[in-house]
Amino acid sequence: MSHVLAIAGFSGSGKTTLITALLPELANYGWRVNVIKHSHHDLEFEPPHKDSARFRSAGAGEVMVVSPYRYAIFHELAQAEIPTLSEQIARLAPADLTLVEGFKREAIPKIEVWRADNGKPPLFPDDEYVMAIATDTPDLLPACQLPRLDLNDVAALARFILQYFSEKADA
Image 1 (tube, helix red, strand yellow):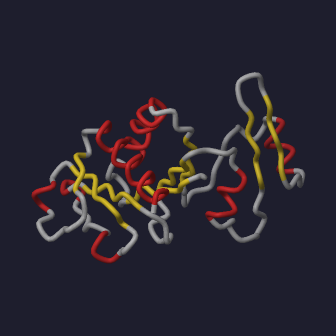
Image 2 (spheres, one colour; image 1 turned 45 degrees about the horizontal axis):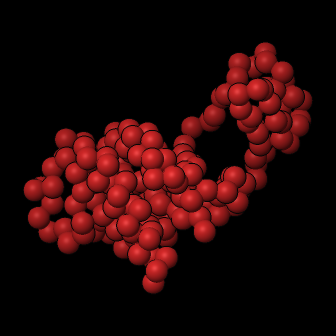
């Protein structure tokens, strides 16, 4: 069964850096991991003169580009609603875990990345789905009753994730 976990926090907190570091750690345990990143920006993958961009501009709803190294599917929303997180996950290959970056408002388990230096308030007081805080300043969160994980100890963070989903599967 595939599990879903958001790595949430404000911009500049280190979410991408953490996910990038977690991927090889989780792979060491034999877990296959997918990642979905939420972006508020328009996505440009190829210059406008490339074939796939020309196909999309000409009206193709989806364009698949395939090489000996990878493939990508470009799907034009064309005024349609953004697919739900569940719909996005369903398009991915099977995995043990799908990490999602962002999706602060989704009702899914989250590890919040919080840094005091970022100057933003923590999310956990207003989000019941935050199950742990990954931080480099745990002493600055005295009112937090959630597990506080060392943001710089990625191996321990990976073990926490594995244990969390293992216990959830046993329940």
